[in-house]
Image 1 (cartoon, rainbow, N blue to C red):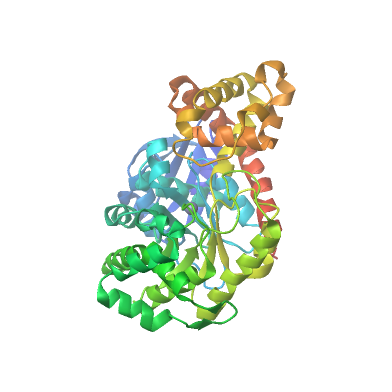
Image 2: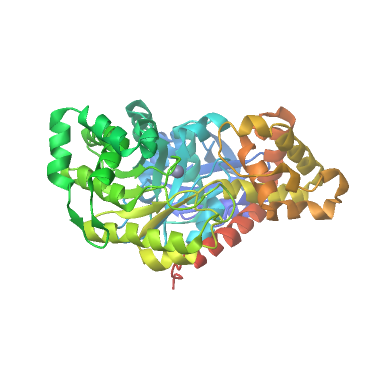
Length: 484
Ligand code: ZN
């Protein structure tokens, strides 16, 4: 098999992807670009598990395969480091959404410079339906990118913001090993506005064992550094979160029934109210008492974590309350905080890094799409103009899905701008948000979709470099250590 790589290197009509040659006892594999896209070339006794056709390289026939789900599964079988693996405890784990299936290579280039553990293939159901993909597609495209990057230090895969057991089942069956449960539909936000007498009335209407349980365990209990839980705070927390806690326990039991090592995150970031540290304490304590092995908890932090732009809010209050959440984490010492919509939050990243030390989880997604938009603005101004116009004309529809503070008046009219200016739109918060939340609608337009992916595939190296620079910046701000 030692000739395998020589045959590929000596073939003039193709480009061998550097770093993609991996070898084990049964097979040699590598990815080549033939001009018609990327293909996996395989040689060895394991060939029987791959699906493809023979094609000649330097005169020698080699099995050449599409980057399909079935071939990704065969790769995972022969190369265990291409399969999602456990996230080390006490690590800075970094979640990367790759909506387009083109960003993971750039993400890994950033990861390879820092001591962070990547969570790839991070996708919510909303993102799957907006991009018309399946969990199988998302995971296999991450697997091929891990192969191409020559990255062998392990990664996890996150079924993000899942709400129901059937959704969790889809992600687990596809091979995902992190599940983020979004229980926002079971959170009763109206309790935030109840008066004291309303709180009393609603609490007394609960089942007596529920009432007794919470009263016995929490009323007047002193929580280190947070103070004493009084009746109002307890009733409000129970009325807001009890059903969500029950739902989380039920979902976790289902996950356990699958008998696989799954990292379980509970997320409450997509709710209208900030999660109080006392609520955090009670929620997590209830989960742990019910044998839920929590990997991470994503409260809704103080301030606005809007997609693709910097933090909006009072930074000192954020720092103080983030510290309180971290103290609760330190008290239980068995899970970590998770920061969602972490992209571009440069003003608070150093605070997060400092307070949480080296152990927290952060998620990013849309920022990788925005780097692709930046690439379009640099390389194909006419295509950018089309995308920009679609974004602005369909903004009302997109606002039904996303809660953003963008003000259209602050986006300079594109008709007045010359081509050289266009990349600057990706430095303006309002334009970033407009292009961020409309990505599904932009890609719905057939001609734009085709031109966009053609350009991205053609410029994939440039795209990877843009992502490497942008996400390395995130890691640096978060205090990640360089790999030595
Ligand atoms: Zn989230």
